[in-house]
Length: 299
Image (cartoon, rainbow, N blue to C red):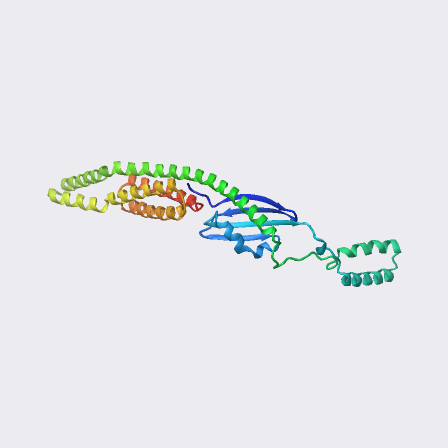
């Protein structure tokens, strides 16, 4: 089964002291890139989060947002009394200088508690999370990644169906190329004969049949695309097998096969000495471009 590189998932977990919510968003990327944001200290624990993410994701750009709402412990509560005293002294002096009444001054004093540094939060920057918190974060992360996997599988099934539809279209165009190949040489032979007959009629110059045979043989050799058609058909079979099998590395394998298919299609178009063959080659290359856009999102 193919896996898409885009998706979204969320998970939640709780401990007696905290509530944890994790969101995981993935977009396509040639390699795995994990970015962690959210509540401290988890942005600094990116390596631990990436270990969990690698169980689910092998390629793509993965953004993980960890939100932890912690209940305040008694040790976390407190005022910076030195800072508060300095603020109050300055505010009192300013109120007296402005001649504010005592009631107005009381409102000003109440706002002092909101000033920076008076009631600092317990900073966890760079600190390890509590012992019971990381297991809850890991559970929430696993739940988010599992939902992300479900969305990626669903999108992968849709992409596989579309890729196989494009495969069938290229196969049909290739069949038309095969059917038309004998007519290309025959049409060229007829054009040569018509020109020779016209030249003989106008100038009376004799032309031996061996000259005609040689000219037609040279054209047939220059415009022979049977090898390209055979190789393109073989690559088509590999492509369909890779889409149906899916699995690890399917995206990279498909990229390589489509690159080889594009090379054969380009050669087919350049060697085709026929308008009909050129049209089929252009249609095949156009479909390959659609395939390339799709497989950029396959893991």
